[in-house]
Image (cartoon, rainbow, N blue to C red; front, top):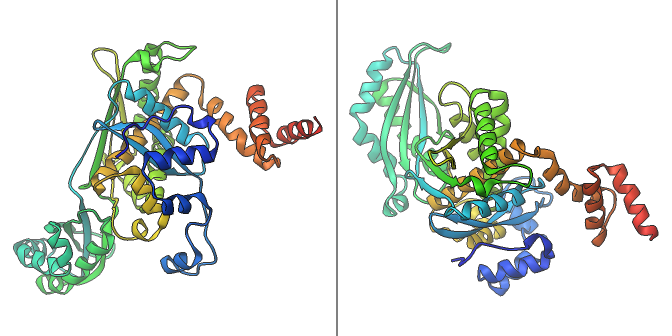
Length: 428
């Protein structure tokens, strides 16, 4: 367990110094230190066992966001991401949130849905009732497929039956299996159960089963987070905290009413969530699909977060979204760095991982809204992006920071300017 997630002056350290700090804080073994210290931790042989047609591996920067307190506990949060400013913004907003106690989080049970599609029936409502009447029989068949899950306290808990009486392909009945998957993401489990019950479903309805597949709209597997920040915490050199609060609420309201803004607003949330999901070896596409589908649950695409001002004038932010993540199975077990990231994060359950991930998403969203409501998004982002441009221009070692600092100071972050600065630097 991390005693303190604060990592002061982390940005000023070299990668080796940062790594040494995290290795000590997370109690990494010598073997784990060696794994993370060298590139290519995922061998080609191991990659070849994970996916098809492997020709090599592809790496992303792995950073650590500090300062996070969730439900009173400190976390160091590994984030695998290529975009500048993401890790910095999450860490800084978590630092501001610490002053009010950090983030509060909660989650529902790890319930996933599997869908069984039935076609070729003339009495869809009668078929629905036939399935509901046979609920216990269906559950018994589903649960016969995974004794290990049952032993862990999970299993198929219930069924739902949805009728689509008039489709271009005729009447359609879709049965949902509601499955407690415990600490797994659960895709393989629920898919196996859906296939197992299909013969019984056909017998009960007289129809033909087509698709038997999980739904990534995991609306029964939600994670939530809340944060409260006093105005004084949010103040900048140019604006009072009260002005920042008003600006953030106005920016959120824009996203709540306009899907064009909401798409970018929610992308910013996922800038925080996805890197945690990727670093821990989870299925970020599943999380993305569920998040954006959930953002449409009212019938109109809208914000995944809310930002309000309470009676004392403090800013209160909340987030709620599906979080189908796991600690067992898939790349969480086979990818060496995913296992290492989970050790650094030190979560005890998939639900806890989901709660930390949405807290990071909420922090990232706050960072973006605060910037938009004050100096604009480009000032801070371009200052960090300047390092990338310096690399493109051919800078190496200390040259990278020198060229990046000069471009940021000039507010002129361009490749040709980086080339000119690099040439001048080398002449000296």
